[in-house]
Length: 451
Image (tube, rainbow, N blue to C red; front, side, top):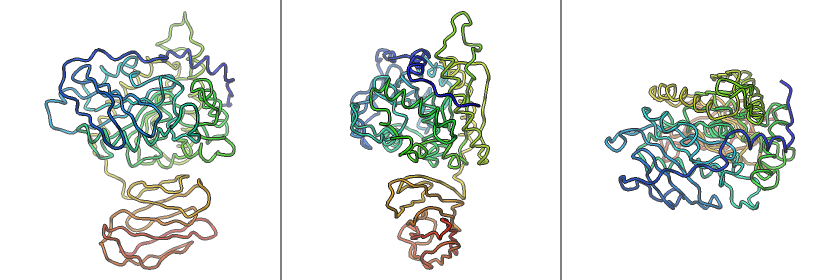
């Protein structure tokens, strides 16, 4: 496929004409219901909470991570109030120029989930149906939109807040993430940056490569910058930074660049090619819906190529004719939900050996923690085949903390191939080992821990 750089005015026209509502419809009037189960916690303050049915809640929360309060729409399983069981959760994101109510108002989510056993959480990912956040803590925190730490809000605050306020399964096997368009990018970005949190991820007409394939870079820069300037009303590089000087930050949030992190995640993708399909009116073609779907179809194709090259499994319904519009996304959600129920029913365990790569200076995944010792704010580091027997590490010198897999107070012998580190390490009071690892000239090291 040849990359296409969409002119910003054309792209904005396309975004404005895709059928995504500019402003989400107001929620239905509140009805008599049980007392609100929601309270403050994890940095979130509950501004308001209204039930519009026994299943549906519309909550507004405030956090210091964001400049303004935001909405969270929640659908509960039928019979939630009559049982004590815990339910799996699905975090379901809207797209550009959308809002927390979109999936209920336009995507038939209320009916689609009626007989499914999920707590469905649909948060804002932007303000007032603007261009959206691209699911990141912004590089520029001083735009007219103010504080914009969206990843911190969604991942570090919202998820544990939901788990504390509702009867959800707290384990990875019972938590999934999905989204449409920009929300499809976000669902795969969060799943790749936090693979220990989500067992499954779905992208409906998403853009899961905006920075890895050179053709995706051109496409991604056009998409992100046009949305940031034209719809968010801020400077073009506010979100990820300059795409040349801060290219590593773009890649550090880009699903295709992090595809190996998704090796143990159930991945589901749907996308049309932009040509009018069964839900389009041939007498009233929508050029915007055609252009955007063609663009995200390219992006999805680049992600699939990256997954194939890395040997990462996925399911991709490249369904041919279909535009960037709600009937297709509603159909995709209905298709995904029974599959997700099957995945959740497996109670998939955490893998025995894990891998993870990141550009962050400090990161934690799968109960492993890496603190790099380097001058650069961002650079790649990587764990490979990490298990109780040892791990591979690539990157700058770092302190690696293992999971609590060892006997507290006991000394363990450690050997290194391709680098150096302590030969004897005593497990801490929680059974974790702390190893300061220095890779050799090749930049990587294999660490073996004697049991």
